[in-house]
Amino acid sequence: MFKNKKVAKMVAVTIAAVFLLGVFGLALSQTGTGHAASAGTASNIGKVNRSLLLQQHPDLAKAEETMKTEVEQAKTEFETKSANMADKEKQEYYNQTMQRLELKRQELFAPIQDKVDAAIKAVADAKGIAVVFDVSNVVYGAQDLTEDVSKKITGK
Image (cartoon, rainbow, N blue to C red; front, top):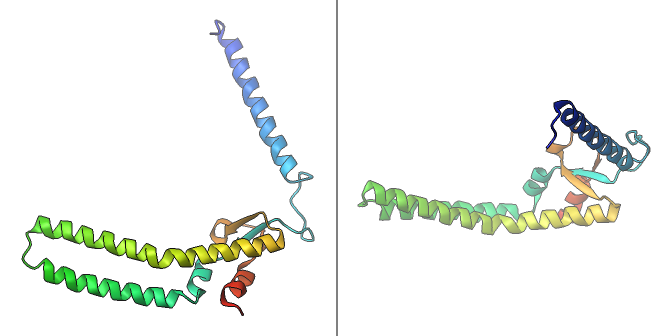
């Protein structure tokens, strides 16, 4: 396309410079003034400790107990039915049992995760928060919504 390597190099450098300036301009426009928000400014970014919220959910104990019972039943059933199986059959049956337990786990815990996510969204919407991250993904800043979401979930 370009016969002269210098011209090709200059075009590539120009394109890279335009790209970088565009990214820099976008970053400046997203922060308002180009500086980090001051402590007195409300942030539209929130953070929550999602694992803590899941652990505190009132339905979790029942789901864990049901899952424990399912695992015990599957273990007993596996030991009984696989006693006379060949190794290959036993491995296939084991894989089927594990898949069945994984589906049961999803069936029990997905509604709890959905309820936590709905509570996070409700609190964020009420506070005018546009984006919510898990605390494990936030190094600095963001408004912590964990306590408010926990109150919404537990009703306390």
